Image 1 (spheres, rainbow, N blue to C red):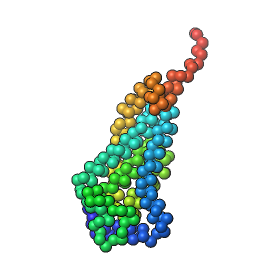
Image 2: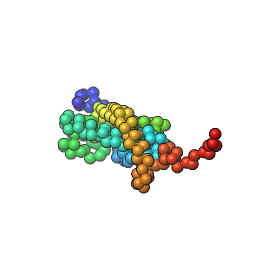
Image 3: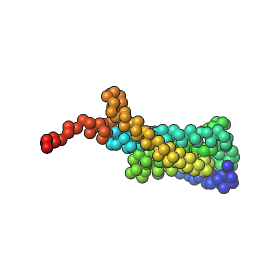
Image 4: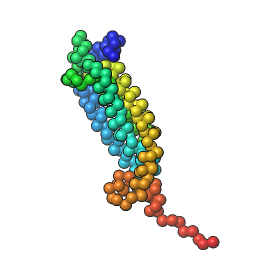
Length: 217
């Protein structure tokens, strides 16, 4: 996987990283992990806003974190098969990584962070289309940050993004209908925890609203 082209590109990026101000380097180190937390916050926001909508909207929001988990599992499975060493260990003539190099056995290809970011970006965009303007740049920036801090090759993060995005693009449409049916049934429940999770929605609101008076013929 680590061809001369991707090695050269890795060197160029890590060399560039060392020329940036220290605050940029620290921001990149922070973003490589904090981005995951921000995606988690967006999952919660997407779910919360979907509670007042239809069952399809709720299903898309609920499936978003599950699709992201699928992207991670696929990426981790590929990682255990390929067994590619980290560039911070194998590219001897490159500048030092900005963060500690992961230990041997924590393989490089593909990037799990990028797979999670790619899956989250697409899954959230399916649930909340307008937020794609935020989630897609977030995913790209997270993927780039993994090369910037020196722990992945460029092809690691590109593959991770594709694996995660494709996983979400397949997983969510396949399950949205059965998930919507299940959530529609749950919305008719009187169990407080279920009511809180699914929200009022259009189904429960319609059931609560008084019917208009209909004069007899």
